Amino acid sequence: MEKYIIVPAIILLLIGGGLIALLIKLLKKPLKWAFKLALHAAFGFIFLFIFNFVGAWADLSLEINWINCLLAGALGVPGVIALLILQYIA
Image (cartoon, rainbow, N blue to C red; front, top):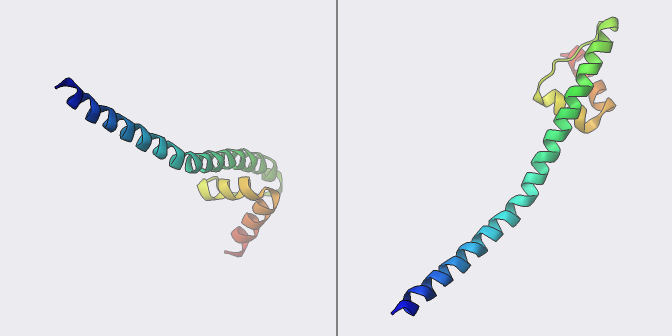
């Protein structure tokens, strides 16, 4: 009688373990992208902070928000130049 209970439990454990392994494999790439995006935003924040500090002498400043941080972090100097152009056009 005990082996009739053990076999379904083992099958359920194997299926559950397989589903957990599949979930981890599927989430691995999006988590890597999210970490890379957050890293770019952090570098963009630092870059914009330094730019605002140095740009104060020339009366240049940019808002520090998520979009500006991501753009500055992903594109670097050309991204900051594009933000300056957009700020003075609009």
